[in-house]
Amino acid sequence: MNSTKISEIEAKRNKILPNFILTNCFQCKGKVVVKYRIPIGEYSKKNNLGYYTEKEEDKDKYFCNRCAFRLYFNEKEKIRKLISSQKKAQHLRAYIHLKKTEFLNKLKNGEDIIWN
Image 1 (cartoon, rainbow, N blue to C red):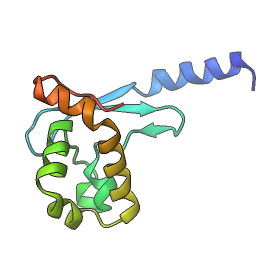
Image 2 (tube, rainbow, N blue to C red; image 1 turned 90 degrees about the vertical axis):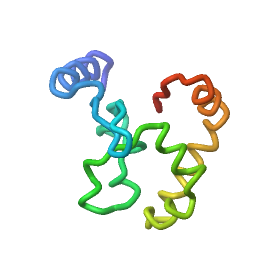
Image 3 (cartoon, one colour; image 1 turned 30 degrees about the vertical axis):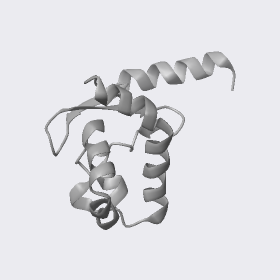
Image 4 (tube, rainbow, N blue to C red; image 1 turned 60 degrees about the horizontal axis):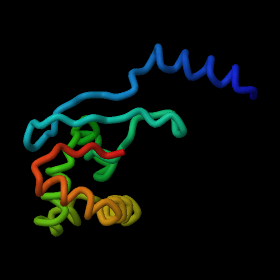
């Protein structure tokens, strides 16, 4: 596929789908930005509770970054009960630990955090 064809496909996709979804955290009602991931052709699942719990009733529940950190660092037992898949628990754990320093500094300074 040449670059012109790819550009045309991306232009059509951008007209149909927004680059992000703006929703509210199910816990604190704060804003959550869910980015569209072009390589996988769907929205990011990092902030989606249903992705981790694999429960139908959680599929439309999103959590903000602050609540994710609070839950992960303060309520690990609750996380273990919520997330049924070891692989998905590992994804969340790895992502949080890779970004821990950056995110904790932003939390300390009271800045908003957007997951990329």
